[in-house]
View 1 (cartoon, rainbow over the protein chains, first blue to last red):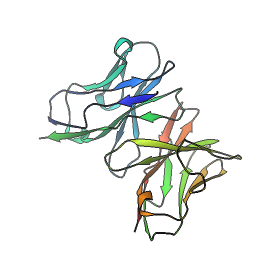
View 2: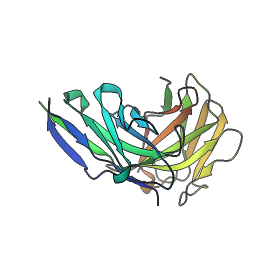
View 3: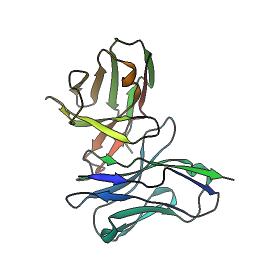
View 4: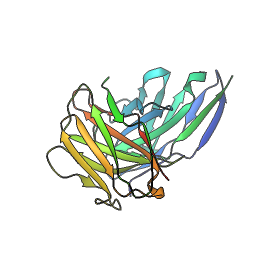
Length: 113
Length: 115
């Protein structure tokens, strides 16, 4: 079955600390992998995506993610978190860039000053 | 990036009434749009794929007679929740693929509350 798992429902970090959000997927074919951020009152915004090539991908807002095929993982990282990064983060998988998506359950990030 | 709007942003209705939600791509056209449903503190679940000029494709378990989808033009898809009940209360989100940008853009969502 196709699925995306985000093990951490809620993460709290101090501003300036590093961050890693976990994502594991199960997909029959070679997947397109995505990370989105959802802020209140705004639509989901694409942070980064991966299909092939360098397994470390850079995204917007200083985020990066690493694809590990052996672990079926696509974890999101940021070296230094800012208070404005507080939001809900979703990992998703699809068959291609503009395909319908299967989302994980999301991780809510809270940032303390 | 491209802009996708949804209207209304929130709606409260009585049980048994029908509610129409619009999804518009403001500066690009799309033959396909996706409708998702998000319960509080849960993930987005795909409900259906809206196809311009043809019938929508519904995901397993989604009642097509309850959630009517019409893709009236290349910039507009509507989701009508017919005879709404409290269990239909949710956050409905559309996404629109943009072929040139090779990604899809999401609307801000519509919060439906059925009393």
